[in-house]
Image (tube, rainbow, N blue to C red; front, side, top):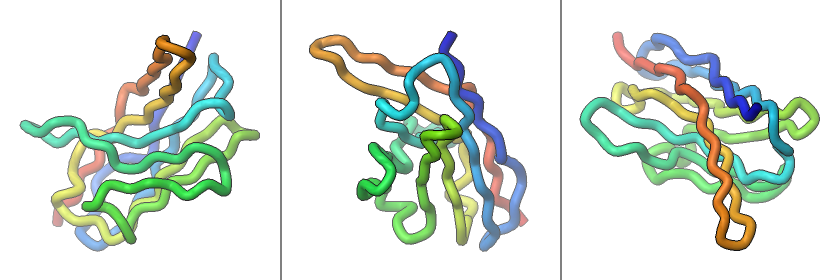
Length: 120
C-alpha cells in the first residue's frame, strides 16, 4: 500500500521558518521524481518544488526561489521542504507528490497534505 504522510506544518509568524517532511512507503522512493505542491483557498494547486535524484538541480516555483529548499533522503524514503522567510502568501495546504511515467502509464501518488499558516 502506497503511503505519503506529510508533517511539520503549523502556524508561524511572517519571516519565520518551517521544515516539512514527507514519509513514504509502499513504492520504490528512489526511482520517483518527488515534488511539493501547495493549494491556497480559492486557488489552484501549484508546484512549489521538484527534485529528481540526490545531487540533481531542483526546480522551484518563481514565488519560492531563494527561500525554499527541497531535498530527499533515499535511505529514509523521505522528502523534505525547508521553508524560510515565510510570508502570508505562503499560507496553503502543502502536498507531497510522487510521479513517474512508464511508457504511457503514469504512476501518481499524493499525500493528505499539511496546513501551513503564516500569520502574526
